[in-house]
Each structure stands twice: as structure tokens, then as C-alpha cells.
Length: 596
Image (cartoon, rainbow, N blue to C red):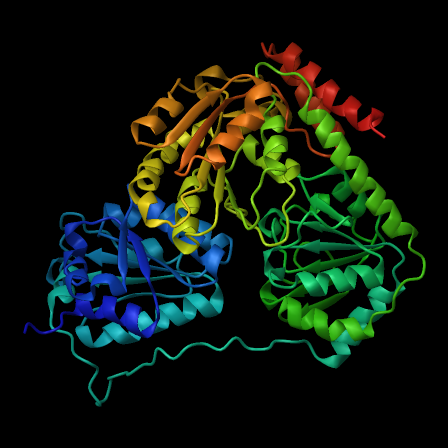
């Protein structure tokens, strides 16, 4: 029997010692010594070949988001490794544990300007800043994999192990019990209980108890703390907004949940932040401080597991470093129930009215389809336990506002990097992680053309492996890079630049059908609901191409003077679509005024 190679050992160590079930990747001769190990590992560890290494990195990131486990991706040396970077930065900025294993040229070639030789340590040093190392001898393999997995999990960040192709082929040997030999362990990390001391908890409780109008801002770091947040909000008579990464942390079926915050946020969230006298931030590093209370307006308490992230976005009075759920449980006995519920009642009234405003806006006419109606019609049709993914673009605006997420659902997007193209790779990984749950991805035509059509091949290829094949991809086809178009108008005062913004036509429906998927094109707003019903009942993955109006503006919850000034400039400079988007803007704002 042939001896175990280092490449084979790496795979078996991941499978048997770390419990990894799947790697996402793309082959190349720089990792042939690892790929060959799959013959021995067989079904203990699946290699999921995707159409592009960027898809592999996105899928590994999504696996981490949807399971809490370390996602693993594999790429060859040089160009393959380079292609991983965008997806790995998505993991880094959203604090997700991912391990990237990449090939490298043979050790004796390094430094010779060899073909496909790239300084991978330097390349990955920023994105995998917590840990990036090259396996120079077989005796290092266990140590590097153990440290990379453990550090990724402990720091919630990407790590990278580089394996030259000649090392992959060498017989594996454990580190000797000698000077310089370093053994390691794959023993599981037990989640520590991290709670602030009693003094800090008392200080935080004093601030929160003194407040009369308490606002809570929740992010992805509060995942798993729904019961505790609900209890705190009830005691304090508070309303709660959420950052986009916390989309499913705090479901919309609570009347005091105001929805998202920021440019993609809601009017109740804007009013919550501007009306509060106390701010409790839990597990969020929401970056846009202009959407938080004015400094000095509110006293602040922040809870975060990472001490590097507290006191960063708002001048907090008390910073509590600890796990969200554990810290809130320790804080709850110190909180006093507020007898005056006027603030809470105001928040709930604002939320109730806002949902009616959104319904009114969704049904306003457009040419041909109002994109808001697409998500309005989906919301009530969402199956229990659905997993939602979104891309980055104007579709994200409607996804963030119009869908009522219920308890038991999951949702993910590229929250901090805000990169295009993760929606379909995320959906693919969601189906592998939870093959029995329905998944719905929302994406614009720009991102679909950039990478989505490639990932759709993977969806079609692997669908038979999922016990529930419900994976629906909604493509908003408006022939426009719409989010950037609106940014040009609103932030720069420029009219739409057609040469940069207009997209070529593409038959998304026909392409999906060519792959054997259910596909249909919808141009009539009256047919949107039926299209969703057919897609969810198709028994196989489906794509719906909604032809939407690019001139329905993704208006923020509050329009500032600077934004009015810039949009006026765009009109003055001769934006050809000005009459259409001004009509839509007025309709949207009138609905906010008239809906009671």
C-alpha cells in the first residue's frame, strides 16, 4: 500500500479530526497532490467543484454564515489563489471563519520568477492577517491545519495555508520529538462564557434605567440572543433597529422592531435613532454614524465580543465586552421595567404605519414593474424556515425593506464589503448546508451577468443532491447598474452615464431553461404573485426574471439637503430619465405623508 502523502493527510485531518464535510474549489496543477487524496478520502469529505474560485470563496463564507462552522475553500497556485480574494475579503469584513488552502510552485522554483509564481504570503497577508503560513515540510502539515482552523474559529476571520506542490506529494510524517518539532492538537474549542464584571454591568444598567426613550441597535453579533433582546426591549419599553447583517437576528414579527437602519433602512428606524435619549448597541459595528443619534443626544451602552470594536461608531458611556446573549442575561436582573410605555407605543405605531406605507409604495404604477412589488408579493409567500440571500445593488434596498422575516428564517448578504455577486454562491452553499430548507436569492441583472450566470450552472449541476430542491433566484432585469446610477445622481449630482451604466440584454429565462431549471419572465405586475407560486412549487431550482423599472428611486428614509442639491444638479445637467424618476419620487414621498 502506498504511503500517505501530505496532500492526502491534509484532507483526512480536516475530515476526521475537524469534522469538515465539504470543500469548495476549482482544480489546477498546483493542487494536484491534494486533489489526488480525494481518492482515499472518498465520501468522508466532498470536493464541490464550482465554476470560479471566487464562487468557492463566497460559498465557504456563506457556509460559515449559515452554520457557524469554518468554511473551507481550495484553489491552485497563482491565478487560482488570486481569484479567491474577493470572497475572502467578504469573510474578513463580515467576521466569518474561513480557511483557504492554496497551492504553490515547488520549493526549489521559488524566487526564480517561475511560471505562475506569486508571493502568496504577501498576497494573503492582509485578508488572512490573523494567520497565513506556508507548509515547507510534511511535518508542519498537522500544525498548520490545526492552527488555521482554530484561529479562524477563535478570531472569526479568514486564515490561509499555502502548500507547495512538491510538499503535497511527499510522504506525510508526524513532527519528531526533537528540538524544533512542534506537535499539535485538533481538540475542539469550547465556546467560552465571556461576561463583563459586575461593576460594568451595574454601570450599564444605571444608564439604561435612567433613559426614557431607549433605542436598541442589533447586528449579527447578537445571533442567538433573540429571547434576551426581546426581554430587554420589553423591560425598557424600547424599540429595536438592526444592521443589515442582523437581518434575521431580529425578526419582523415583533411590533417594536423598526427594521433596517441607514440608506437601506426604514423611516421608523430613522425616527427611533433621532428620537431616543439612550442607545444600546448589541453585536453591531454599523459603519455609518450619520444614521445614529447625534453625539450628545443619547447616552450609550455597547455590547460586543471583540474589545477592538467597542466605542467605535458612537461615543459610548459604557462598553461591555462579552457574548451578546450571556451579557444580556447577566444584565436583565439589573434592569427596571419602565412604567411609562408612551415611547414604546409611539415606536409600534410608527412601525405599523410604515408597513402600510410600504404596501402603498409597492403598488404604485411603474414601467413595466415596480421592483418593490416583487418583494412585497414574495413576503407573505415565504415558506417557514426559508433562507434568504441578497446581492449588492438596488435590489438589496427592496429586499431590506419589503420582506418580513419571521422567526426561524436565515438571511445573509455581503454586509460590510458590499461586493456584487455573492447572492447565488451564497444560495448554493445554503442548500448544501441545509438541503431540506427552501432558499431564495435576490440579485440584479448586473451581478447576474458578472458571476451569477456561472454559479447558476453549479445550481443546476448539484440540485439532485438536495432533498428539497426549492431554490428560487429572482433577477431584477432593468438593463441598468441601478445602484451606481442613483449614486451618480444623488451623491455626485451627475446625470446617468449611459456608457458605464447600461447593460446588454441577456435572456436569463432562456438560459435557466437551457440548464434544465424552471424559468419564466414576468413583465406584467399582475402576474408577479403567480410567478412566485409556480417557482416555489416547481420541484426543482427556478429562476424568475422580473422586468423592472430602473427609475423607481431607492429613496433613503430621510432625504438630506445635500442629496436634494445633487439630484437637482443631475436634472439640470440633462438626465434624460428625470421626468420619470421625479414622478416616482413624488409618489413615494406622498405615500409617506398621506398613509395613516
